[in-house]
Amino acid sequence: MNRRIDPVRQDSGYGSTMRRLTLVIAAIAMTAAACAAADAETDGVGAAPGGSEASSPVAADDAAETVGLAVVETADGEALATSDGRAVYLFRWDSEDTSTCVDGCLGTWPPVPAVSDSADSVDASLVGVIERPEGATQATYNGWPLYFYYRDTAPGDINGSGLGGSWFLVSPDGTAVGEPRGGYGY
Image 1 (cartoon, rainbow, N blue to C red):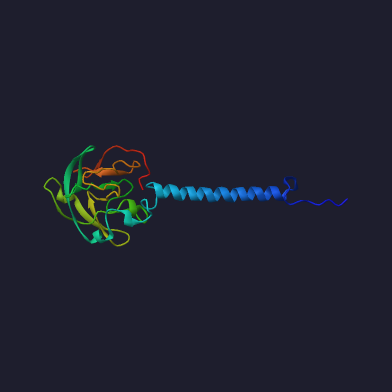
Image 2 (image 1 turned 90 degrees about the vertical axis):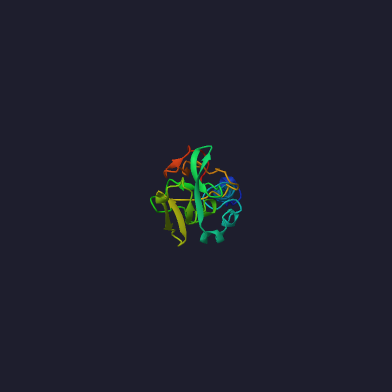
């Protein structure tokens, strides 16, 4: 008796294997799509919503400029800001005079350019500058590379404070200000 095996029938083995393979491929594709969508909607690794550094309030032209620093009162306590009131942050995974925020991180956390002047309340001996991995300069305070947060769009905004337990405002003595809070951070 010659019995034909139907490749579509589940009991034949072939159809069952193909269905499983198709499901695995579909699951992988959906997972990849969901991760990409989550990255674009949050502050995950990658850029800000819109997917480019252009969505940052600090334009690429600003990299050559300098900023002044001042001490301001925030909801988290006294912290450094630019002379026009824009909060600056430190990243706890950086080390002294070394920035680890690169590539997609820079869309969410653009570096503060060199400091030109500071208010009397800022300890000028703690102000410095480093060369970033891509060759640009970045301001430091007490050795910490300084960053802006792309969602701080108005003077006094501190939306990045404590984000992901890694990004903090900077106190006048050069230490982290604020409490860790949820979020992806970058």
